[in-house]
Amino acid sequence: MTVRERIEKLQELMKKQDIQIYIVPTADYHQSEYVGEHFKARKYLTGFTGSAGTAVVLQDRAYLWTDGRYFIQAAQELQGSGIILQKAGEPDVPAMEAFLKQELPESGVIGFDGRTVGVAKGQEYAKIASDKGGSVRYDLDLMDEIWEERPALSEKPAFLLDIRYAGESVEHKLARVREAMEEQKADVLVITSLDDIGWLLNIRGNDVEYFPLLLSYAVVGKDGVELYADERKFSDEMKAYFRENHVTLYPYDGIYGRMKTFTKEQKVMLDPEQMNYALFSNISGEVQKIQAENPIVLMKAVKNPVEAENIRNAHIKDGIAHTKFMYWLKTNIGKERITEMTASAKLEEFRGMQEHYMGSSFGPISAYKEHAACAHYSSTPETDVELKTEGLFLTDTGGHYWEGSTDITRTVALGEITGEMRRHFTTVVCSMLHLADARFLHGCSGLTLDYAAREPFWRQGLNYNHGTGHGVGYLGNIHEPPVNFHWKRVPGKSKYPALEVRMVITDEPGIYIEGSHGIRIENELMVAEGEKNEYGQFLHFEILTYVPIDLDAIALELMTEQEKKLLNDYHQKVYEKIGPHLTEEERCWLREYTRAIG
Image (cartoon, rainbow, N blue to C red):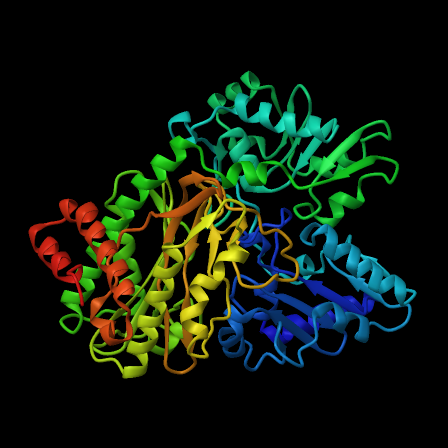
């Protein structure tokens, strides 16, 4: 079926069910940012392949809301579909909720699969419908009825994360979690986020593309843990491990029935920002609900000393691979045919040579010239282009190693570039360096510090339409909430926690010029302890990523002496840390590309 035919088929089902508006988000049952193939219903329905977006279908037309990362990409992919693109946050574009209020007729019904919609959203949809004298239907997965050959749920095996990588035992983690439960006077804690369950039990899986996570739910009690997952995924060794740690296995879908068994005498702690609407609605109104942030979120964001040291080692491996790739690219461009996709495959090949490499940590971005203006462009056989000895080429990639996960972006000049490109490149580099060099008091958040990165842009009347950085998980989500750098409070993101020692966060400013070029430079940072004096505890950042920044694209005259020093100091460390692991030819090249400037 074409996209138009899928929309029409969905609209036919809506009419049969007397549903006026049907919502299809980009979500699984766990409010995960990235989802497995079984859950990519919005992609199937609309043809839009970006990782964020919501389809809103009326009985006679269809819309797609997405954010600034995907405006260009969505406009291209929706062509000919009849779907109307709504650029979220842009002037004259209504918020999706305002649109629903406007378009839902009196006594109308809003439909959605309640397993794929968060509590707050579900409650908001219910209120919008109620205000119109209508209702919601959250028990219908209409997409399942139109999706031909829908991929099955993953059946891949789970695995244990050894203490030498996890750095903390399950017993100790559970003690910390139960202490947090005791503070809230909770009898049980319901956990629905995959990365939090993986962290708590030191287990991982292969159920989400690019993320080593296990489809599961957990209920933590005072004496044991109920784990709801496909039992076939666990070896006898893992089952014995669960018994040792008082973890009892139940069927994956059994969680929905379990929610109905809580009694009014029990105090159930849950995080409404992580739970889906269907699960929440299954809990009786008589049950005492303690709605609070899942305590694991911040526990997990602060890496323990073992994790921190492992992460440093993972970044050395990743730096070796990426530096080898840059050398290969710079010395072979124009001599052999290289495309976006073959270049991406070559980078993956270099990563695969590193010990303990497990695979990509997210879908690689390999974007040449104007393709890089789409912040989250994904090259396909249809869009794959050959790289020439001109213009800019951007790669945003990462890897999972047993020692941790990485995320790095580099933009390189493949030949002649314009003066504007050079100015933009230098602005991005200076922005990244400014933030990495920040010194700040404990208590500051990413909301406070984002200005350090934006200032070089704003001084020129420029900006970029995404956050400057995100938290990074340890063999979990590469975009790990709640840590982030952003200059303003974003609707739906109410948490801007203070930065703590050993939190890991990316530093990735960029600029995107439609039809011309895109530039982004990304390093990972770890929060480190500075001096403590009468003013308080000072903090700074330790740079984790060590890969050269392309001096061929720098405009030295646009940099201050301090910015030149920051770049020189960084490049000196790159050479010291990565050089010893390269061949003589690669090392000579690296020496030239990390030379002191100015």
